[in-house]
Structure formats: C-alpha cells, structure tokens
Length: 608
Image (cartoon, rainbow, N blue to C red; front, top):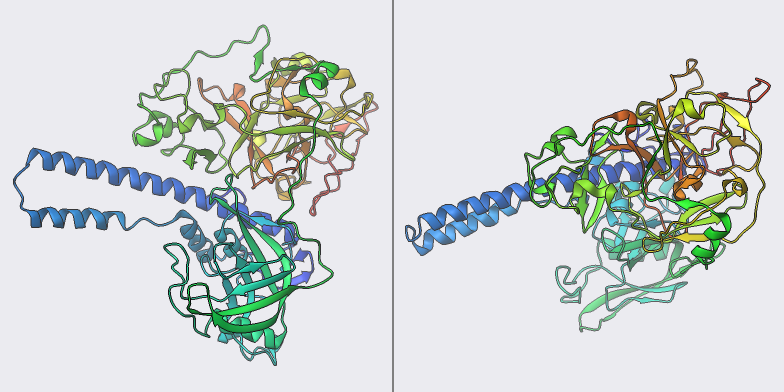
C-alpha cells in the first residue's frame, strides 16, 4: 500500500539512539516522527475509504434484500424474520475502526517508531507536541495502547541489564483524558485515578471496585522505583478528526498513592504525581493568536490583484470540456463512476466528518468537471471548494514574507490552487519575474526542478504588519509587485517548483542532465493568491499535486497545494521548492549558491 512518506523497512523499528536527536538510519529523530505519522495517516485514509466502500456495499445489499422481502410479503413467519434480522446484524460486525486497522498495518510492517517500551523522553517528541488520536501515539510508541490510560512495561522486561534493581510492572506513560470523575488536574500536580471498574461504553463512571494489578500495580511500583512517567493530556478539539487533541506535557513522578472510596462509593486507587523541574513550560492550556492589520487597507497599500482562479493569457486555448460522469449526488456512492476509473478504480479523496482529504499523492488527480452530473459538493470536487481555512501572510524573521494558518489543518486537506496568469514559458524567458511556477507534472512528482535559472536583482524590502486571507474576506485589490521581496531576501529566483515527498533523497547530486522546460507556467507577478508567499522548507508540511477536472491535458494541469502533516494553528506553511543543487547561474555564468534558512532539523543547508 503506497504511503505519503513511508518509513523504510531497513530503518523501521529503530529503538536505540545514536545521539539525542539522530537515529541510526541517518535521519534526525524529528524527521522520523514526521515520517511515521505520515505513514500512519496514509494507511488510515486508505482504511477509511475501504470501510466506506464496504458500508456502501452492505447498505445496497440490505436494500436489495428489503426489496425482495416486500415482494414476498407474508411468506415468512416471525421466527424467520428474527433470523433474518440476526443475519443482517452479523453482516455489520466485520466493520473495524480505520485507526485500529492502521495500527495493525504499521505493526505488521515493523513501522512503529519505538516498538520497545522506554522510560522517559523519546527522541524526536518534544514537550508540547500534539497528537490527534490515540492511534498516532501508539504508532510512535509514546503510549502503546489505544484505549487504556496507563501504559506500562510488563514482566518480560524484568532481569534485563538496563533495568537491574527495578520492580515490574513499571508505568511509563499516562493519559489524562478529562472524562473520569475522580481525577484532579492542577497542571504541575496531578491526582490520577487507577484503571478498572469504569463504564467504558457509557458515561465512564465507576461501576465496580478496582484491583491492584496491571497498570495500577505499575504506578505503585513507579513510586517505589522513582522512575519518571510521561504525561499526556487530552482535550476536546472540534477540528480534530477524533474530536480530541492530545498534548505531551513532559515527565512526572509518582510521589504518593492510596486507596479510597470514589465518588460512586467503589474502591479506587489514587496516585499523586508531580512534574519534574527543568522542563519547558506547559503548553496544553495556551491559546495564542495574533492581531492582523485590516486586510483591505494592507492590500490597497501594496496594490496586488487577488485571483481565486487561474487567468488565461491571450493566445492560449484551453481544451474543451470532456464528457463527465453520470453519477447522482456524490460519486462516492457509485461504484461505477467513470471519474473513479480515471483515477485507477477508486476516487482520490475520502470525506470523513465532512472534511475531504486526499488519500495519497498521485501523478495526476482527476476530479469531476463541468460536464459531470454529480453535486457541486461531491467528494471528487474537494479541491474546488475554495479556501476553507484562515490564513495569514506575515513577516518572518529571516525569510521575508510567509504564510501561516490560524486553524488546524489535517493531512491530505487541500490548501489552495497556485493562481496567477497562465502563460507560455517561452514568453517569459529572459524577463525578470520573481513569481513563476512551471506546470510540469512529471518533475513535480520527481521532486526536482532541473532547469537552470538566473539570479536577478533584489527589490526593496518593506516592513509592514501582517495581513489575513480568510474564506469570507477574499476580494479583488491591487498591489505593486515591485515592493514585494521573494521569500529569501538576499536573492531572487526566476523559477521554482514543488515536490511530492519532500525527502532529501529526492534531490540527488548526481543528476547531470536537466529536463526540458515545460510549455506552460503560472505567472503570479501581478495577479495571484497567497500561495506565492509560501516559503520553502527542506521538511515541509505541504506537497504539490497536479489536478485535472474538465480536460485531460497534463500540460495545463492545476497546481494545488495539499497538507502533508497535521498543521497546528500559527504554524507556517511551507513546501519544497525542489531545486537541484548548482542549478542556478548568475549573469556572469557562474554557479550561484543560496543558503537555506528554513531551520528544519534535516535542512540541506542550501536552497540551490
């Protein structure tokens, strides 16, 4: 099963740390965490799609049986009807949660990052890091059970050299879910209730007494042994696909334990934990926002024409609309959808809790077009729905302008189309143009831009407050490109392109031959959208995807940016420009080298 950024089998499951932030396979621990989460999210979306197809087929079968029963009404007695109902109930039982199936897939392929349980911090996972399901924590190994609140090392660890003189079971991590009535959370000090006796399928209240075994015994032993315990807090978050977010809040120690009758009168085990000193401050309760200048005033000052869609220059003819699908409603409910066949039998998107997400990057995504009979909100029109997030264009410390989100964005969610004026590449050769994106689907998916580019002069740098683009505030306003600097203010690049996977090995130094220039490009010098301000990163959180809908000419595909990771509020958006090293030449013909300031742990140190 293909994934956005699969963890190599040769490196999967590495648990020993060479240095605090470097893994045996040569990648930083932070990058390994990101790759593991991308692999999980790809598996998860595949299984969501698989489950939706299974449920749709089951529903059609039930409807067909119901129709048959109506035709033979009166032909069966009550006992037969009950047996039919039981049979239908059994048909529903094979359903499995996509997140649990994704966990199983990761375990079967040895892709869990830290499969062996460990005490203390895990490299690559920092205090304040957030996770959007318990399943994400399981595949990382920070908390290895998708339901239990207490994670612990069992008796199999007893006697190992590195754990001499420790008594097992031993607690390694707890999750404060906020749903148990006997818990008390004072941030740096916690009163934690043991496990067992809860109505897990109901209101989570205590319905029986707890026993001193498994996780409860592990917490007691942790007090006696004095080992640190990771603490993760869960909170409600509407934008999360699980409805919750889990924040790693650092290491605590059990300083006391006792037995008492809980709120419901049953025996419960209580544990008092205190946060260890010298750690970063708690971030769970932080709410940070910035105040932007009025959008209208800012854009009027700069004089830019905002374009929601691509503008076509004279002399370029767009192919006529092709015949579309004949689906009614949403194409996801039609197994014979012709647009699904164009994508290789399955639709490229899956809609879960009203959020459309790309299952995996593809060479080309074929969406429904103008002649398709499906609804405008069909899942296969996901990237056509317009801006769904509040995005801010702001001034960075060292990279000029940048774009950040005010909302949580899930992996696979479309961000925007790169808009501007569609032009022939030959018409722009030799011109000083700082915002050109080549439409080259093949090179985009390779992650390279093998074409030589020329170094241009540096425009005047201005210092103005940030401004916002939001789904309801988009308007046509003008702004002078001459006062806007490129993302890297030390020099200007004439052409840039994005990549699919964003991994260092997509930029081999032995690539000697440059591919031919594409026929068409997007010129965003005077007309376009905020995509032109999105910066480069060697470890980006976006990827570039070519999209077709109304025609099949890949030379005129839409260039669309998608989220590769879960992007938190106030995080900067970035994609890999994909330049080959030593591919840029100056006016004198000499190779120009530009340092990269993205700040990623695995930064390549050079943009080109």
